[in-house]
Amino acid sequence: MTKYIFVTGGVTSSLGKGIISASLAKLLQSRGYRVTIQKFDPYINIDPGTLNPYEHGECYVTEDGAETDLDLGHYERFLNTPTSKANNITTGRIYQNVINMEREGKFLGKTVQVVPHITDEIKRNFRILGESGDYDIVITELGGTVGDIESLPYIEAVRQFRWEVGSGNSLVIHLTLIPFLAAAGELKTKPTQHSVKMLLEYGIQPDILVCRTEHHLNTDIRKKIALFCNVNINAVIESIDAPSIYDVPLLMLKEQLDKTVLTKLKLPHKVEPELVNWKSFLGRLKNPTSEVRIGLVGKYVELPDAYKSIVESFIHAGATNESKVKVEYIPSEMLTPGNAVERLKGLHGVLVAPGFGERGFEGKIEAIRYVRENNIPFFGICLGMQCAVVEFGRNVLGLKNASSTEMNPETPHPVINMMEEQKKVVNKGGTMRLGAYGCELKKGSKAEKFYGKTRISERHRHRYEFNNDYLKDYENAGLLPTGFNPENNLVEIVELKNHPFFVGAQFHPELKSTVANPHPLFINFVAASMAYARKQ
Image (tube, rainbow, N blue to C red; front, side, top):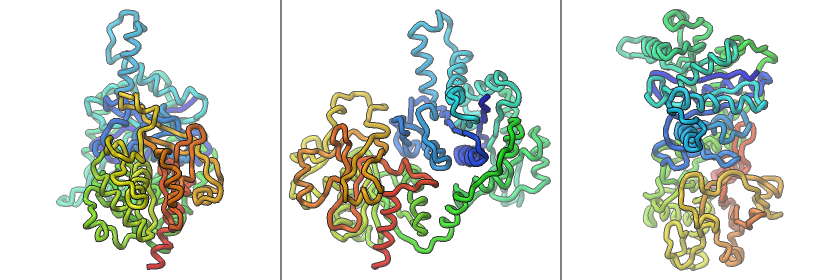
C-alpha cells in the first residue's frame, strides 16, 4: 500500500515546506523508494497561470503543460523526475470539479457542502498519484499556514484521510519556527507550542516537528518541545538556516529525518542513502575556481522568485563549470539608449528573461543591441528570444519600427506574430502553447553541438512566434534559425553567426535543469561568459 506524508506549516509562511518536502523525498529516493511530491495551494485561482509574478513568483510549467506553483520546480530539481498536473492542486480546481459535478446532477439533489463534498474531492486528489501504482510514498505539501481560513478544508481532509487509511500508513510533518529573541538571548518554543495546539484543535496530532531556527537546538529545548507538543524527542528535527537549499538534504540526513519517517511508516530502511553525486555537486558549488558576472534583464527583478528556475539553472551550470555565477538583476524598464552602456558594462554575459506585456520591452531591446555589438555572450529566453529578433530586424535588417504584434499590433514589420491557433483564443487561463514539444536542430549548429544530438524536447509557454515570412531575410543577414518544431515549422532557436555566444530560445530551458542534469544551454552560456571574462 502506498504511504502518505503530509507537510503542514505553522507560525509563519515562507519557512520552506517545499525544500523540506523535496529534501525528504531525495533521501527516501536515495534509499530505493519511489517517491513523488504534490502541492495543494489554498487560493481560488484554478492555477498560477494568470497570477502576476509579483503575487506568486514564477509559474512553473510541467511536461504535460500544467501551469503550476514554483515549488514543483524544486521537486524536479531535487528528484530529477518530471511532475504533472496531478502534482499541483488549488482550491479553485477543487471547487470547480465539485461545482461541475453538481451541475451534472451527480449529487442526486443533495445539498453540496464543504463537508463532505469539498473534503471528499480533496481526498480523491490526495489518492490520485498513490493509486497510480507508480509510487511507494506520496508527499503532500499543504500551502499556507495552519490557522488560515482557506486552509481549513485541507486540514479537515487530512484528518479524515488519516482515519481512512489507518495507522502506520500516513504521517504529518509540521514545519514550524523557533525564533531567537536577541533581547532575551534565548530561543523561544511558545510559537511552536501554539501552532501544534491549533493543529490539535482541528483533530490532528503531528508525528514529526521540523523546527526552523537560526541557532542549534540543545537537548533541553528538544525535550521541552517534545513534552509540550506530544511527540518523541527523536521526532523533533532541527532545520537550521543553510547557505544553500542544496545543503538541506544533508542536514536532514544528519538529523535522521528519513529514518524517523520510515520507522513511523513501518517501512524497512533498505540501503543507506547514496548521495555521492549530490555531495560532489555541493563540493563544486562551494569551491569555485572562478567567478562570472551575468546580468539578468527582466521586468520583475524586484522579486527574484519571479525568475527562480533561471537562477537555479545558473547554480547548476556554475557548479558544472566550477565557477560562481554572480547574477545581477537589471530592471529592463530602466534601460534606455542613453544609459544602457553604463548599466551593462562590466558584465561577462547577459540573459534577457521571459515576460509578458509592453513594460520594459524597449529596455530589453537596448540590452540586446549592446551585447550584440560588443560580442558579449547573450542568452534570450522566450520573450528574450523575440526581443533579439526585433532588435536584429530594426538595427541590422533596417526594418523600421519592426516589433511584435503583442507590443504593437500596428507594426509595419511584425517579425514576431501571434500563432495562428492562438488568434481565436479568448480565455487567458491555460490556453497558451504549453508543455513539452519536439525540436529538430540543424546539423553543424551551435545548438546541436551544445545538446550533442539533433532531436530534443523542451517546454513552452507562449502565444507569439517568429514570423516565418521574414525567415530568409534573417538567414541571409546572419541571425540563423537553427531549431524548428517538426510539426508546424515554428522557429525554436536562433543563433547569431560570428558571435561568441548569441542564442535565443523560444522555449524555457530553465524548466528542465536539475542538479543531476544541468541544462546544456546554461552550461555553455556560463562557459562562454567565463571565456569572455578571461579576455577582459
